Amino acid sequence: MTNCYSVFGLSVTSDWNLPLNPIDPVISHNNSDVTIRCTNNLEQFQSQEPPDFKGDHYSGSSTHLRLSTSVAEFLIVDGRFIYFKPLYQQYDDYVRLFILGSAFAALLEQRSNLVLHAATVVIGDKAVLLMGKSGAGKSTLAAYLARQGFTVLGDDVAVIRGQGEQPYVYTSLPFIKLNQTSLALLDLSSKGLDKIHPELSKYRFPIPNQQAAAELAHIVYLDVDNNHSLGLTKISGSDAVNSLRQHYFRHFYSHSVLTQGIDIFKLSTVVLQNVSSWSLRKTNNALLRDIKNVLTELQ
Image 1 (cartoon, one colour):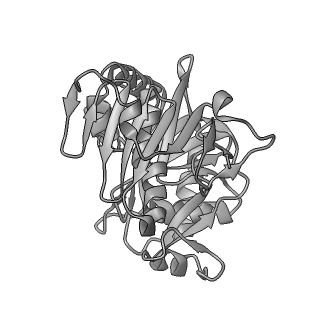
Image 2 (cartoon, rainbow, N blue to C red):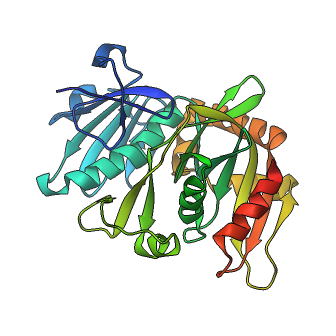
């Protein structure tokens, strides 16, 4: 059975059921933007040319990238195909996480997209990226804003494409991954929410009312700082460049995917030239309501 979905502004067909938004009418592998297939023989799709680069868990060229994980082998080809070979039947949910994470990130970069580790919320009619170190509160804040009626394009992965000289962010996965601490802060129960994996205490919080894309206007870096009051500070120059580079999603792909790496650098430059970058200082106990009020100043 072929499953049909829409994600990252692309139509997707997959042999496996995935936690994505289904599309109708049904399309085939032949006319979808992306095809995801399970196979026992990755080698039949592998390039015969020697790899141009090699890392600890990946190797390949600008068109063929081989990924090795603890639960499956992946081959990403031409920005259109994800072939995968599961290693253990009992870890299918982990395989799905890798498909929608590392494998899809590589495919998107093969398509010359800029892929960033960020949540995306629409404020006014413009997209705002929320970035920060693990634990900074990106997902919790995105879920809070979604519950307050803001449009959230995605959590964890932000996909950017240029339209002329203006970058746009495209809708991502249709859920936000929340742990028990985040659920408690949001006064939410895990009852009725699906776990992202049976062995992990993280849950899928559905994102309501996603839209296809929005023009990117601001990047906000969440910085935990208990020595200063809540507030926004504009950043520019080398600080803005370095902050953006630190949040490339699976950044080693950007350095390894040769031709696409040049395009990604150009798109990064477009972002830095046309988008405002900010540091949002917040304490560990800052109220989500107060952070929302600071963000709405960006309208």
